[in-house]
Length: 237
Image (cartoon, rainbow, N blue to C red):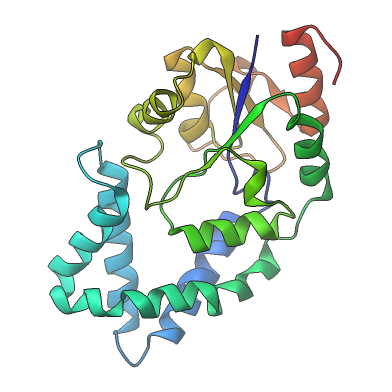
């Protein structure tokens, strides 16, 4: 019996060409901070600090890991720039929405599910809350639709680490056999099956770096997801 559904965001509830998103994101960052930071160095530094977050196994919050690494690269004065980065996400970052067009079916899906399941937005917590909640809004959703939205402020690990999923299970005292993870990334989202969680691979914007046989997982679009849930729980939605 599935009681809790964890959803990925980018490429799952929010349509996204990841390469185009990353290109525009770093381009906007470089233009915004061109006077303060050499653009190519800033891009390399953010990738470096992001890699440190991905390697985090729970010792610190991702936010602290990110800014600690940035301070190693730029000195402690980088902390004075945090308000400027927050302002970037409130302002210039919003222009990237143009490559993330909302799918109306995401809103329909969440409305159909939220009265029957606990919903958690298990998006990879590499961004601050303002950037993540902005993308939630771009998807036509609201943060109140979810019991938890993972961000770099409230998380101590990242996908594809199992620690990321274990921390969510522990926080909400969840039985993994009663949880379903829905995501479009084979390596980052389907890995939680190792913990005994159900998984469903969203294929509209599939990411399969390891060239896995996707028939190993229940998969398809949102209509297929509804059919899968009705089959597993034995009741119509």
